Length: 430
Ligand SMILES: [Zn+2]
Image 1 (tube, rainbow, N blue to C red):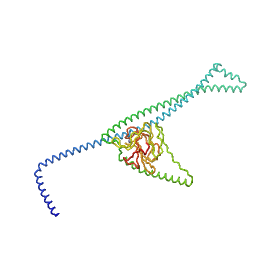
Image 2: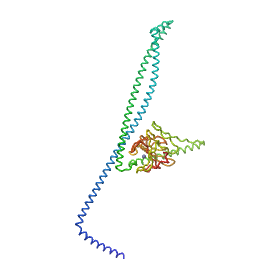
Image 3: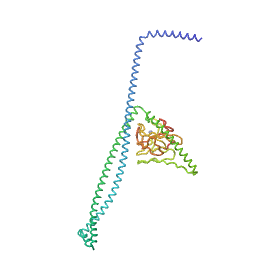
Image 4: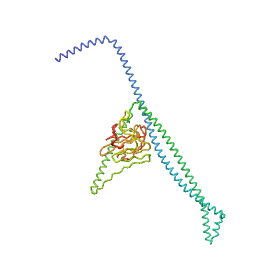
């Protein structure tokens, strides 16, 4: 039964094959030229598509090249702005010092002028007495009034001393005035020099800021052209770098936790042995102040504290078609950034997207957290530094892919992994 069906199928297909074979021979001449035409049309289309693709790829590559160029320019400008700001802060401090010196000199001048005034009165009195007594007469009177030779010598010495004193007063008078003028001239010259330097630096900073704004515009344009969503894109190399650093930080964090537990155990043992309920005092964290317009935010009581002061300008979540993996906090002036909790700094570098950025690994009651602080003007902690909650780690800035001064703050539960940040609201007091 099965064999018979198969045989029939074969026979049918042979018959059909012959029929189609005959048809194809008849139409061969016509169809070959048609096919050739189709083929060349397809090839044309393919080459169109191919050249279109090549063109598109070239365009994308050229945009990417331009972006890379703009980003490297931005990096250079960020560094230059950082450098200029540091110099300006130095000069401003020196100007304040010089102004204080001028104020001190003015105080000294007042004292010296009073002294000179007193001497003038003294010398005028003396001059008046010369006039009234006819110059040296009173000295001669003094000498003539001596009762003995030794008295005469004493009186002569006294007269000489008085005359010498008059000379000294005049000399001192001259010297004081000269010194005062010299000091004043020097300090005024210093101040003028410093003020000029500061003005130059201010101008340079403005120029750099203008350049940065220009680059921002250019980059925004290029990003639009590429139809990229505005998010913190991070290249693979940077991701790998962070992951590698994280491994070391975890080792360090484990060791710190072991040390802490060993210390706690030792303290508990010592306390038990002494049988005195002396409690080990927790170490207080210090908040770094640091000569800025703003003070560090007050350190709050929980495991986390607010990383900076200012207003929240962008929350966690969807933002203009892109996803915002952090919270932006903005404020003008010199604004300190502090560690949100105790931890280990494991990344402190410049990134073309995040600018000056610091990553901290925390161990809070057995749970690992990671916090990220981006776009800082200045980083104040290096990789491998242990920091305490509220300790200053930098100054708020506008570095990297940033439009306006702000802190971009990210929180991760557990280890850092690209685009896996969580909403810090409700965990970190923001
Ligand atoms: Zn942000």
